Length: 86
Image 1 (cartoon, rainbow, N blue to C red):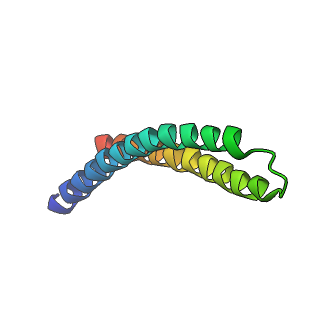
Image 2 (cartoon, rainbow, N blue to C red; image 1 turned 135 degrees about the vertical axis):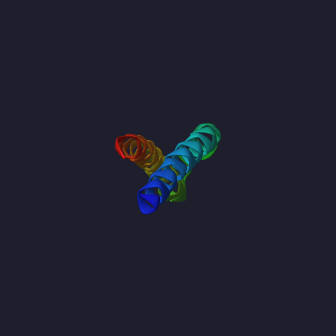
Image 3 (cartoon, rainbow, N blue to C red; image 1 turned 120 degrees about the horizontal axis):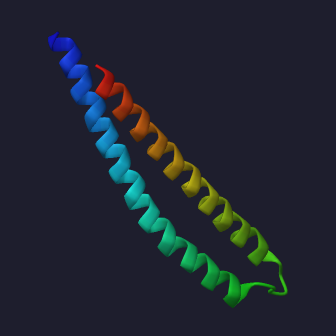
């Protein structure tokens, strides 16, 4: 029974940490997206086309942030559900 309680506590911590990390990333993503928009409007369409690669890279990072946030939120929910069943 002690091991079961230990697992439950670990799952609860994971749930809390994942939720907190997702919230932090969400705040960062908001600032990041604003910066990407500003950069895109400032340098978009430059004669060299280098801007396209950089903007594409930044937009890919935005999508990855969205995926990470969603994955952490899902992990938090699942860990919490599983812990509550123990």
